[in-house]
Each structure stands twice: as structure tokens, then as C-alpha cells.
Length: 619
Image (cartoon, rainbow, N blue to C red; front, side):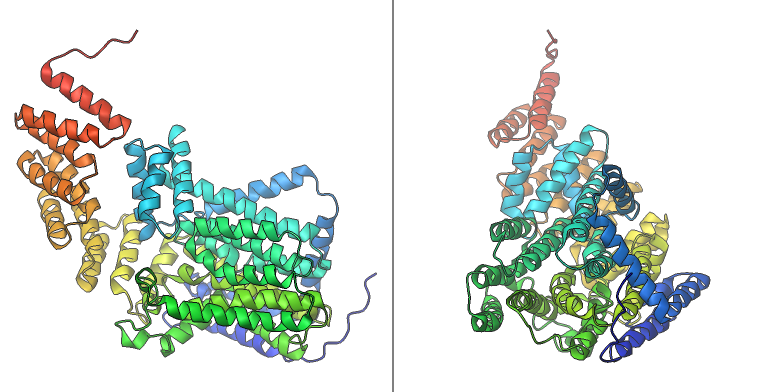
């Protein structure tokens, strides 16, 4: 029989809990207000909204809240016992299926489509992993490791008849399974009491970590996995110095997978130094020193051109600067999205006095947590506020790691202080919001409505907003709405990517003249836009305009002299125009640029056919 739970020192944490519930209820009926971090239910039918609101309200009954906490505690206790392999396999199958059904971070909006197109191009040209890696290393500075992993998955999928989208989706689902297994491992083997492990598992599986698996950007799932593994290692070994080498390896791999993982470096530096210090005073001031150093380096880095591409402190939209009301409200929305329990956790820290650490282990965990949180909050404040978080929320969800690190330390000390009922109710609110959010993102009709509602209060990056709407119209088969949305995106922003999308629309529907005219306009404005040039060449080949192909391919060879595609295209166009000698010169130049094997074979076939030779017979 469990010991009687002590009476809580204060009921203060119920104030933010009631506030979160009130926001959930209000948000359920206000889709066009800046409550995007908590208004997920507004995109569901009225009976669903009312049922989920009622469920959340019932859980305010203390007995219900305590039962929910007890349920999580019993689940963690059972995990501590030897778990049958069949159960582990069953969890893996359920997790994999869930991630696949919810699109496993392959909603493919904006940059996601560019990612898939690059994978498809690599497969069509039969690039080896080495060739694709060489291209990625030279051109991709954000997520090179993830892009290479996606290409390997695409090649493997192609071998069994799967397209790039499904291949990447399956890869992300498998990463998601590893993520779930990592959380289950903590639940079974963690050093914390069962009730702590149960509550932590519930918050992780309904917060920002798992949300990255339901996002728009395909490069974030390895980062989410690496981040949660680093957090578990850091918290479990903060005081004894074990597995610091493993933590280093995880951080390095995470950075290779996505550059945002550099935000883990201050916490890693703290672990390396703190685990070798015996002085409590040093451990106490070390987080302030490291975080201060991070802020100084971040300020200095603003002068680096590569950083300036991503950190914009004075956006053109004056109403959406770093300290604008809209940006600060969006930050609050993002924090509620990644951890709905955050206001309650902060109140627990105040009510239960969790700011005073009692032993070396807790001091070190607090230091580690602060070194995770401060860089994440700086990032959240200054990283391209003009993008608008309502649409690009997953770009900012790195905040999850820091917020959860601090929440974990607070929860550890508060769960045993009469807080089971409070935390049980909080877990239900988190679960309701998480399920609502996943359902919105994985359903085209709800996502379409959500993006349309955002335009009512957020006009930042309007072109991108309409591009996203066009993707959903395309999936739903609404051709005219798709065309109108893409046209509006280009008119509002002048971004040539949207004009290219419109040209693809024309090409797919046989309007070759408008497609060619639009692509020529793109290249007139930006001669380096290689994807537009390749698309133009293919469109011209379909129309048989070989004279124009010659000019476009010559321009391409001038802009990209090491790309074998352009002399290859020139050779084919010369042949079509009867210019045999020029074609041979072009093909020889192509071969000198080390083209893919498929291109070499195609040149040999074209030359044989042009000379009237018979193809070689197989032995």
C-alpha cells in the first residue's frame, strides 16, 4: 500500500493550470486569433471540441488527477520489470504505424518539396552515395548528414519500387521508433522514482520532442532523437562524469545531422567542466559564465555573413521585430505548444522552492538545464522573427530541449510534495492539445483551414503563406484554387520559386507556351537558378524547340562549367539540328566532366544510332 501523499505547501500552481485550461477553451472557438499554440481544437467539429473540453474539465477532480498520475507510475513500475520481447516488438510496430499514418515529418511544404525533388533528381541520374555526398558537402550547410541519410533511404526505396516521399517517410518513422524506445528505456532503467519516470514519459510523448515527427521540415527527426538522447545522458550522469564521451559523440553526430544542434555545445561544455570540479561554488557560477560566453559569441557572430542569412535583427516588417508584441506573443504560443505544462512547472518552482539546490547532483543538473535553456531562448528570440512562428513553428521548436531540461529538474522535486492530482490533470491537458495538434497537421482539410486563418492576424511572409495554401489545394485536387494561390504568392513576394511552381503547373497541363515564357523570365531575373534552367530544357525538349535549347544550354554551361548536364543537352540538340561534329565535341566535353554512368551509356547509345551502328550483343 502506498504511503499517504503529503499536503501541498501551496495551491498556487492551480492558477496557471486553470489559465491554460481557459486558453484551451477560448482557443477552441477562436481559430483566427493569435492563439495558434493552443487553439488546435477550433479546427475540429463542435462535438469533438466539446467532448475534449469536458474530458479536460473532469480531470480537475483531484481523485481523477491522482488516478492518472498513479496510472503513469504503475506503467513505469511495470517497465522496470523484465519486459517480454513480444511487448517491445508490439510497441515498435504500433509506433512505426502511427508515425507513418501521421506522415512522419513528410508533409512536404515549401522546402520539403525541394528536398524530394533533389532526391528524385539524384535517383534519376543514378548518382552514387559518394557523388550525392560530394554535392551535399559543397552546397548544404544546414543538415548535410540528414540529406545524405535521406538519399540513402531514397536509393534503397527505389530498389524496391518506392518513391522518395515514402522512402523518407519510412526512414523518419524508424527514427521515431528509436525515439520511442529511448523514452521507454528511460522509463524502465532511469534512476528516478517510478512516478517521476511516468510523468516525464507522458510529457515527452505529448510535447515538442515528438511534435518534430509531425512537422513540415524533413531534416529534424535525427536532431530530435539526438537531442533527447543527449538530455537523458546529461541528466543521468551530470554528477558522476560517466558517459561524457558518449555525450560528445551524440552532440557531434547531431550537429552533422542538423546545424541547430550547436545549441547543445554550452551544455556539453558544462558537463565536461562540472564533472571534473569538486567545488560547489564553481558549479554554481559555471552556468552563468558559459551562458554569458554564449551570448557574447552569438553577438559577435552577427557579423558573419553566413549567420546574417539566418539571424535578422531588423526585419523589413517593423511590426514584427524582435521586441514587437506580435513576436513576443508568438514566443508564448511556441512555449505552450512545445510544453503545455510550462506555466504549471514555473509555478511549482515558485511554490515548492525549487530554485535552491541541496546536493551536488542537483546543482549539476540545474547547471546543465540552464546551459540548455539559455541558448534555446536566445535562439527563439533572435532567429528570423520576420518568418512568423505560426507557420514555421518547427523551425523554432529547438526550444523544447532547453525548456524540458529545466522542467525535468523542477518536476523531480515537486512530484513527491502532494502534486499528483495537479500533474495528472496537467498531463491530460497536454495529451488533449498534442492529439489535437497531430490531427491538424496530418489532415489536409484542417491544415488548410488553419493556414487560411493565420492570414487573419499574421501577414509576414505572405508569399510563403500562399505557397503553403497552394500545396494543400493541389493535394485536394482544386486546380483553380492552386493556380490562384501560387499566382498570389508570386505577386505578394516576387519570390521566383513561386513563379517556377506556376510554370510547373502550366507544363503539367500542356500549356507549354506559358511555361516556357515564365521560365525564361525566371532566368532573366536570376541566371544562376539552375533548377529553373533544367526544367526549361525539359519543357523545350517536349516542344521540340532545339534552337532555344542550344542557347539555354550554352548559358547553363557558362554559369555551371563543371555540370556535365549542359554539354550533354547541347550534344543532343546539335544532333537534332544535324550538326554532327558539334555534337561530338559536346559529348566529349560531357564525358571529360565525369558524368553519371547512365549519362555515359546514353551518349554511347545516341552516337551508335546516329552513325547507324548496331548495339553490341550480349555474350
